[in-house]
Length: 124
Image (cartoon, rainbow, N blue to C red; front, top):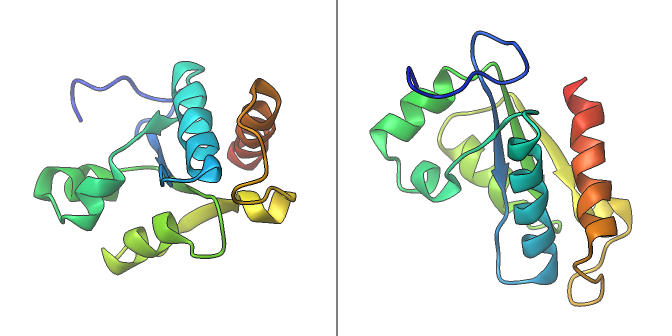
């Protein structure tokens, strides 16, 4: 990650893995992670690379100062992918726990901001 921008003044970046699944909650998770990256809170990173055990992605994730998973529902796909790859210090936010519902909660600036703000709070 030598060429990557460091996040929030930390030596190692904070990485954000979003459920980018096929539902509205996946879309909200994805857009919130992109907003957090744009704002410098952390860096959205490749969950598919974790699932595929891509060596460079695994190594870079091991070097992260913190790992955040944004999951839409109680399937916990992002968190489970990370745990199966050996990452057990995952800080998770589940949109369902915020009262959002698969197939019902609209993808709006307000819902995206709510998720991004919650991760900002977690990141301190």
